[in-house]
Length: 247
Length: 247
DNA sequence: AGACTTTTAAATGTCAGACAAATAAAAATT
DNA sequence: AATTTTTATTTGTCTGACATTTAAAAGTCT
Image (tube, rainbow over all chains, first blue to last red; front, side, top):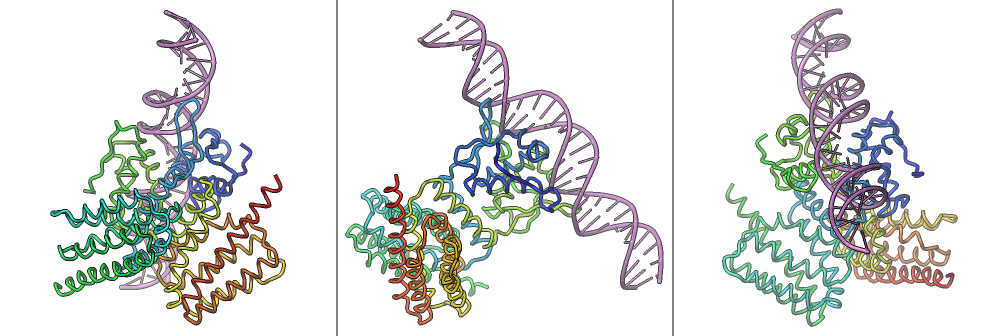
């Protein structure tokens, strides 16, 4: 392999991290292309003048970022992985969720971002939504109406509803970008206890959204999302208030 | 450590990947909290009944996802890492960039998503922008006006301009979410050759945006972003047309 | 007693060497 | 020609050892 990748053993950075960074740089820069095979672990160890276990550790770093996949066998090895929308989606959700919880992001901040971004989809979703997506949204509304549904399941259904709404925009980049925004809020939403009355209100707003999408009326989608945001914020505020009172 | 984490050696998944997943699940679920120390490598090897190198590989997977950080020494070990906005930002940019390039996402799709999301920031940015952010945007406009600036530098300045615009919304979750959208397009934008005339037009639109932000006029920000999107798309289309002609 | 230096112990980082498991391709067999 | 077996190569995992780092403990000096 003629790709130029270097590490500096004098640097106060672990060798495995340096090797991983060098390979990542080669991937990001296009020097290593999708499905291309990397040299074997033994060859990489030679090239970087380190031991094989150190190379393995570097490769595990890359695998954890979905940048490579490995395969055993005669024609095995490490290959540059095509980062799929699915992988990216999943990473996005985990990252967003941790980001919010670890940094104690408050409900209002998260809610504001989520609805701002979701409303950005409204025009495209009104234009491009498919019958399947409408059906998904209606199925989720139906689920939300079921008696005895736990709050957790209600929240999960809410997420599914909004995902279908976002997917209606027919832009995979948008769907990916919004994956975190919508799903990261689930833990925060799980703090809310949804009374029969609040569920009814949310379901009513969901229905209005799906109707407006069907009729291709983005303005109504947008203003209903605003209403939904305000209502959700109020519910969260009620929870916070009740907590203050209980202390 | 009383945290329940299990792996199944019969599963066709690498042991190190399973161990990493078990620890990640414990972090995501809140069982392991920020700054908490994990057991030593030797202890983990005991607990999971694997060798220490296998534990190390698992820990490298987690480190690559910024979920843990390790430290040598008597009181060293692996600690649950607080995922910072900076880390998340950086990951987001890398992921988004690779996603677009590896999946051959076309310019229009990426552009559409980016501007839809950016326009979602307009009302908040108009409301909350600071003098610093305005100054940053004006500095970037000044840079863009400089003669002899390479196209690459022009694109980088464009990114910096739009980042300041997004940061003006004063919502860190929004800034994080949009990091990918704005920066991932840089490689795509780098394909465009900006003539003096096109730069002039872009700079003019940038100026109008920053003026509208200063005057807190979100509608003008919005419609100018639409113009910018259309103009950018046209430039990219011109490049594509020229490529077709050259074949 | 306080400040400074040295030693200690415990952890991660790296290495060498060996064997196991998986896998496709080549060779042998039917 | 189709099927089975063998081969070669790779990754996956292990054992064992040593190096480096680091904070804390112990020792020394003023």
